[in-house]
Image 1 (tube, rainbow, N blue to C red):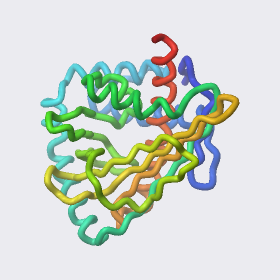
Image 2 (tube, rainbow, N blue to C red):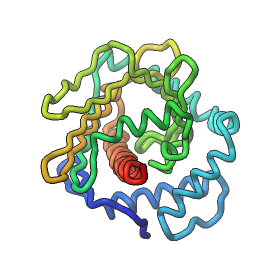
Image 3 (cartoon, rainbow, N blue to C red):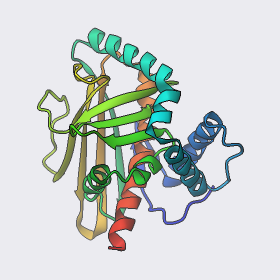
Length: 250
């Protein structure tokens, strides 16, 4: 499978350096799974075409229909999250990926994401991963994200709050000037089930680094956390490309 306009981004996943081509192959496989779930027939060979078709279908379905279709999975995932959070007693299991590349800005990504979220432009948010189902900003400023996380068989609903002051295990690295921190709940009004700290640095000569960290409840199965590293590599590689493509046409 091919896709135009890709950057040479290397993802460090565990002790492996993973090429952009390998991440795109992962995206293509996940896209085929979602095509089947949505009854969309045989997916095209090109990963960009798969991405475009899935975004169009999800936008066509709309928020209400997506929530209706996934209601049972979300309810199960919410119950599981509540149990894992209680058993973890505030402990966290870290999911970390580092992206390295050149010829683009990683620091542009949080502002790109925020602009899309604030304006309700959901297409670039959905396009980042086949496992994204909904990304929207509620009237109260909390972000509602429905996605299939890592290796989980269930879609989950996560409420992200970037304004909350809470406990996060991952310290800020001062060598990364741009920080993106948020806390996630499995249900509105519930306790934080996890957190994220994503850190971005543009370097001399056009290089960049993005260090991406999700904090799951400590008892989250390791295989789910390990699988989610591919999700992070996929969505943020796509967002780096999209943010820089958008900047180039402004």
